Image 1 (cartoon, rainbow, N blue to C red):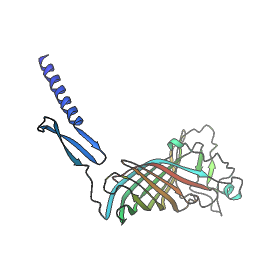
Image 2: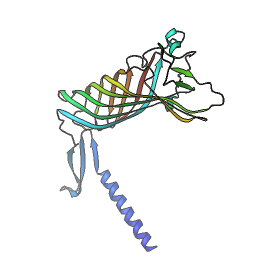
Image 3: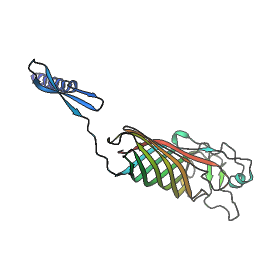
Image 4: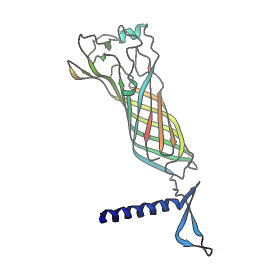
Length: 276
C-alpha cells in the first residue's frame, strides 16, 4: 500500500506540473506567450516572454515525395441505351446494368512525387507530378466483360450473366492509369508547412491496366484482362483544397471512359495525405 501511495503521489505531481505548463502558455494569432517559470518582477508578479510561431523560409522549388490519396470512384452515365452503338457493345443493356455500389467503389492514387515551382512570391506556384491512379468500380448487378470477343467489327463486350444458381460475391472493373497532373497552386500561407490554399488544373492519364474481377459461388475468383474498348487516354479537370492539415482532392474526366457505345464520365473525390 505504501508503494501504491508513493506512485499515486508522483502521478498527481506530474499531471499538476503538466497542467501548469499548459496553463502558462497562451497562443494569440501568430504569437505564443510563455510564462517564465519561477521568475517574478519587483512587485511579485509573474513575468512573460513572447515567442513567434515557427515559420519556414519557402524555397523556389519544393518537392513532396510519395503522396497518397484515398477516396471514392464514381461516374455519371449519359448513355442512350436505345442507340445502336450501345446495343452493339452491350446487347439488351439498360440504364441500371452499370449501377455502382457507391461505398465499395474506391479510388487510390499513389503519387511518386509532386513539385511546386514559385511563380509569384511563393503565393502563386506551378504544381506538377507523376503517379498512379487506381480506380475500382463495384457493380450491383452481375455484368461481365468479355476478354475474347468475336473477331468482327464492333463486337459485343459487355453482357449480363444469367447463369442459373450462380451467386456473385464481387464484380468490379478496375481501371489503372499512369498520370501526370499539372495545376496552378495558390498558397495563401507560404511560410507555413501545412497552410491554406487551393490548386486547379488538368491531368493526362494513360491506361496501363484494365480488368474485370469476379468472385462467384461456382467459379470462385476470376479475372478477365483486356482494355475492353476503354479509352487509352484519360484527360481530366483536377483540383486540390488545403485546409491546414486536412487536404481534399477531386477530378472529373473531360469525356467518356469508353471508346464506343457507353457514354460514362468518371470522377473521384477524397482525402489527400501530403506534407504540404
